[in-house]
Image (tube, rainbow, N blue to C red; front, top):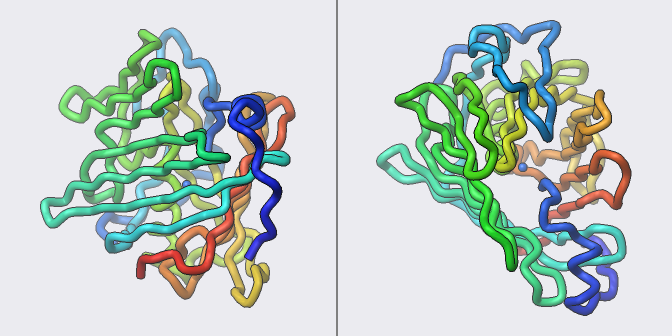
Length: 270
């Protein structure tokens, strides 16, 4: 269990944990692309490229049954708790939520809902609820083949396998769980990830290999920041429990304290 830091008073939490901080077998496997173009993370082009111009693989997936997992949430000297819930249904629908509190103040409230299709998790709507501010949302309009946003007026093409800033946390494990021998050290998983504020980016997770987390030989993957506005993501997955994230470390662009999630003992879920 990770030692806790002393909780901050509510007024200090707002500055310690910005509300805009990012957090996360049914398809035919397509070979990974050796070179995948990236779109800016915070801003999108005025004329988005057609879906065919974005070369992102479609993977086989093995998604988890329903579950709820509790994490210690840390950013800088601020520490609290977070809960990740995953609720798939027999109708091939799902709802997923990540809620985080520090000193009794909600600092994370992300909700994703949608379908489960041949490419795994297929979001319809991703919402970031912000205390005292309007919510921000990305809308995946599958019939129209486009992604729109509650604030920005631009649109992005909707491609197979696209994820949001929350669903990648379970889509990544589902890809690896479907074919564990394929994802040894040196392999990679490529996901298109959409933010609620209009950003889109291709996240390439490189498999580093086994790394000990307590008594667990976790599988570590890293998404390196390659541009000034990229978020660097390090994630450790538990092979014994369907590759659920044991730990996630997200380093914000242009400095700032990393956002860290550590799975607590007593969390439920297969």
